Length: 72
Image 1: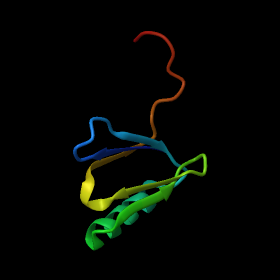
Image 2: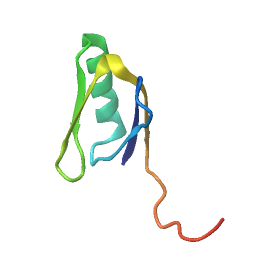
Image 3: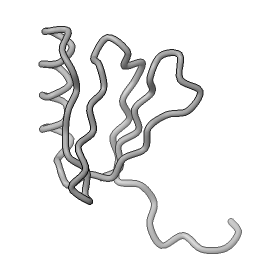
């Protein structure tokens, strides 16, 4: 699943591919925001992503578009 994370005062969003479900990420985000901790998870390639919860502007979770080639 593709996850886009907007970070305050950063010109670009973080785009990460992960094997976690939307429900798992949502519960991690809720816990991080309520404790003013960090949003931390592992991407599809095994890399660890850590973002301070106080700096998260938005999180967009979705499947992404695969197999699109050419003009539409």
